[in-house]
Image 1 (spheres, each protein chain N blue to C red):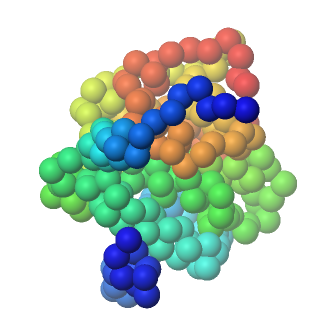
Image 2: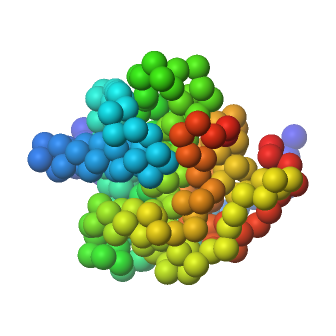
Length: 184
Length: 65
């Protein structure tokens, strides 16, 4: 049974994310959020807010989860799993918001974290596989896209962190091309 | 009441060994494709986003979601 005074695995210890790394990640996400707003045509003077507590909490939680995978699964997670982790916590903590009267009371404003999460996931998919840049996807009047489906699910449904990682890891270019007859 | 499947301690410990073996993925700590820098990947991908057709399915400001 070993030394009864010693708790098994007591030597395992998480090392905090270094300050400069945390600040770097924080800035990267702020830059990506601004780029995202530009991509979807928000004016350059749009007022936004970042809940620093929520964003830093998300960054720390992803760092801890990466340590967990390293320690207990002997693996470094791939980019898809990592973006899934960030997206998961952004959906939970909702660190980003638009606080501009021009866009108040709009569903799009209320869904901005969900849309940003899909943007981050899309970016990693585009990095991961060039075929994603060639997907033939458009908005048909009577059909819903995978984006519509995903946005609805991220806004209204519940995921576990592991199911969300599996979902992001299993998206193919064809997934984006699929058309749905119902949104929900 | 009687347990219908009685295992010896040796059998129980053999199962433990098998579980540890089965769940030890023994992944060789494969680094991420770009050397482990997730944010280089994100930056690279977000640059591709601008010219991708995936962008077309994102509702622009003012569009209904």
